[in-house]
Length: 356
Image (tube, rainbow, N blue to C red; front, side):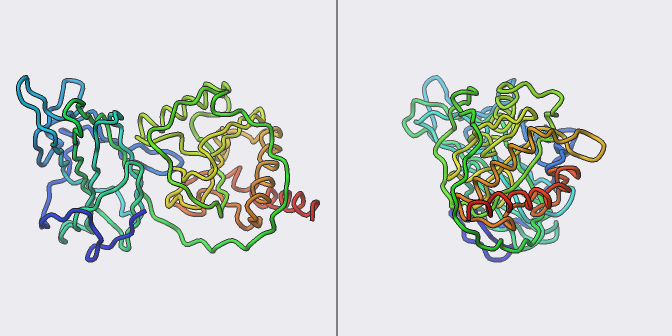
């Protein structure tokens, strides 16, 4: 995670500041704001030349995919695509990035980001962000600009870029949970990644120590359209292909039938509630907004068992069980499920106390 302000910023590469920029024109761009019950994110791609402010040694094919230019007799090992600045519909202080790109060992992508508070201020310096990286700012940001540098490390592989995603929102101040006791409670029966047919993650995970348990709902897909492993595969495909993340964002997923699915390893930083470090994400399949779907008894029992197991394993008190909306401006995990969290904490506390 990178934290920076408009005036002071640690950067990997530094370029001259500019005083003004032209925002994307909806008529020219292929940028859309995806609204969901979680939080909005920008999806960029397929790409068009009008989306670029500057570029070097890259081509855009008819499908809108950017690739490093490769001629019949010459081959440039490095190129870049610098996109026009994006004006956000509302200021944000927290961002998460995703890159849908080639994964060959012989290539590399450098995602560079700079921001500014409004069109009357200078942009920050460029900073390098990891493929699934996070940026936290000290001031609300109105404009953001990205640049992707494509490199061929061996001259044989051609890197390409199919899409970018930028999740954005404003963090809420949340007090740290009280320490709990370590106890051994069983985990519910688990459908492993291999059992539900998970794809191999792109690249390696960054590790963390779990200190908070975050409850989500999917919103989409709904519980009424749930079909077991195929639903989990669909969520993983969306996270990896549309969001550009390295893997499914959650650590566990709970079906309406009470089945528990394995997501990322517990010790891997997730992609579900920026800043994600220290947060273990549990997603219940369904739309639990008011007037939508109900939480099934089977799903609730699995959630009780899982939260009690994890709280005991990591020594987390029930004050460390949160809903996504506790940290972000979002409706997740829906009014229905969020209203159940106090009673869920009570039940988890009762189960933990039974072993003390």
